[in-house]
Image (cartoon, rainbow, N blue to C red):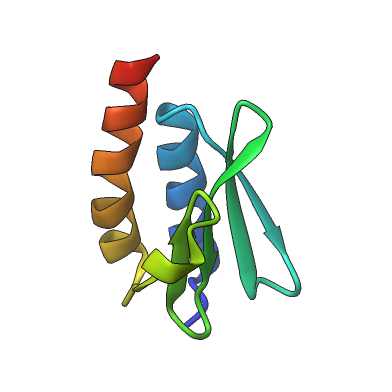
Length: 83
């Protein structure tokens, strides 16, 4: 399910707080989270598919934005440790 405007705004704020830029394309069917100019996460809310670092074989099914943030957070924190 594609998030509503308020949820989208909150997710954009959350992304910025974590050093990510969110780009939404394809009539909100493709969400790309960029870090340092490179795609870090991709999410297709209509299907629930999420991929980190273009690792297609490790894709996950995401229910909603709360689940998306919960799944993304450990990867973001690990990347921050590595610098």
